Length: 459
Ligand SMILES: Cc1ncc(COP(=O)(O)O)c(C=O)c1O
Image (tube, rainbow, N blue to C red; front, top):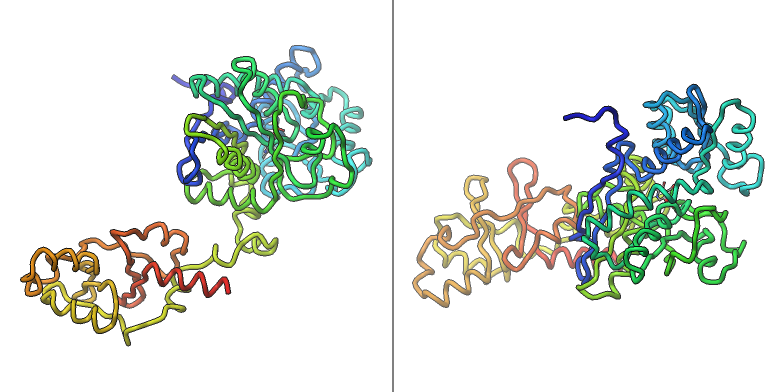
């Protein structure tokens, strides 16, 4: 069985439960992971629909040109569909877009015109105006106009909405999605509310965009419209796809919170997603914190993280924006540097030494765990809590070898291991971790060492 081309692979994306970033929240939170589409974003769906409808209506004929004002993902979808169907593509893209997105469009054979971001939409240099002008000038041009083309919304009404309803077996109670052209949120909301009118739909907006104010007051406040960094969500125009009656609440998410959440999704869930996916999950968690375990929150993740490697996933760039806390960059070597040492070197014990040597060492230096080493090789870790258990049970244990009572495979980390990973590895059973240094040397870090470092850094 094979696919005749990539087009039949668009849609039917998986719904995946979030488990780590949702710790402490009661409801089930499920992510609709749209990077499984062949162009790695949700926009493949609307690209296919808008092109197919244009073909049906005679607006796009063989040899025709597709011209669109796109922030990248719609361009990617259109370029992919055009490559397969044999159309030419020209895209106008605002200059705040990631370099990677523009290069990817060119890789698929599209022509890309980069336009200034910080001009009003009606300025002749804006990406909307340039696309409109080209569409009028070039014969055989089709301007899909994802903002006002209602096939955008319709694509989600016909595909994404039913998929979410079926994948949750009708159990979805809340749906959260970013608002850009609003085709995604409005198409899905319409379908879901038709199945169950009590489903709550929450839109995700950025600071600097008009949606939240428009939803709450029906007004556009020009003072609240200003440049921001998050790509794909927020607008300075009202898209034709927007139907505010389908949206129950709008939450604004800062550039920083969206970016940091995207990084967490990659690190703790293995979901290497784009910036607006981070914003959507940040908002979904705000919603989920108010709900009970009976509820099911579905959040849509629009695209893949590779398009943001030079921004969200680049530590130097994140630091230059002031988005990274000093603590989020700490590694084990920082903890070792700041560690308060009670012993001159690392206190260790051999596996065949009697337990009483260990008791003696631990009492003398007031330490709670001892690495068990021999010939530079780690054999285990002896912990105070285990020692207490053993000596309560058997007073003769003191004469038995340490190897009988040690934890046999202690966790080992490197000086470069990030502290946030290390702190997740520590537990009551594993109160310390061994650090493998160069030249066969070892060191140890404990919870209190990490706490000490955090407190020092935050001073
Ligand atoms: C990365 C990303 N997230 C979210 C959205 C918002 O989706 P919609 O335009 O359907 O509102 C877009 C749309 O451009 C996007 O590219």
